[in-house]
Image (cartoon, rainbow over all chains, first blue to last red; front, side):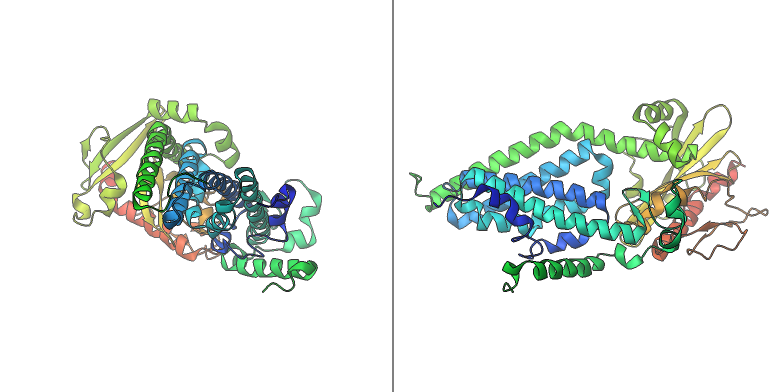
Length: 218
Length: 244
């Protein structure tokens, strides 16, 4: 097996091979949970955990898994890890688990995870697979956080509970009382999942226009 | 490569069996060892909402005061739960552990006259506060909460809301103090004792009028809250009027 460049495993998914903007996987959850920055951050951590450890597990077992039930085994491993995350959130971060409600469970159906298992972990060494999982989780999380940032800021006028726009945006900070910050009214469209489609589309457009390697990928 | 024939039927079945046993066992173990913690969290969450409705504090105060220790001590020391019937009579002096408010409300085989309703009574020697439990429908899913009335059974002491899946930033703002604080001190009834309380569509609150301004961009959630409060009043009306 050829030597894989370990650094590339981590950095590739951030840009050249981003799971959302280049491979266009996992978009469904990116639309649903990017409504606020906090949810996006927690989701990013949860997905990174699941991709990394499912990649590791499948890679360790790769020579023992019967190929006919390969996908069933992958799904069981993913479901196990997701249930683990879900139970731990309920036990240790209850308020957050209430906010994320069904979305944590839906990590199971996130195509990125199974995509990485099939495309990478099933044929590579454990350490490389683990790093690939971490890289892809972060790549996914990065897009989620960017979209979440834009949506929460313009949708509700606030970020992580700190209001920037409108009447409540005072906090004794002088420049928030004037001009744009004072006049801006939150944009209801940004709160709805549809806005993610626009934002994601624009992100993909920007990325492809800047990155020559991606121009021919369709 | 592996020394087994990983494609034989026997190996495949064996692999599945071992996998299911390991994964199932591990999950069962984790789930049962964290179960108590999760139940505690849920119970604390419920008590916290009741205390929020009773104490009607501002956001900063809530963040400061409502610690786990305070909520549990206050709840255990000053709150008693009773179960009443539709006629307003106390049926059970304590709320049985097996009583499930959600199940009772959603039970279509029983008319509302046959259902039992919980009342939480807070007594700190300065007057009682009566807390009624609410349940209703928002835009996407269930909304619920607690409504606390002062000893006169007319004036709203405070409210606490919760929801399952309302839109973040719009309907989900129902849990925020900015919305809830509008309820504090308002009366549910007019001078003649008729129900007179409306959660208006955002921006439609008559100036200087009674009622609450709804959530911006969340008309259906707002209507759901309005209906939920009216329905709660209907459920408890006999208890409320008998206490007067």
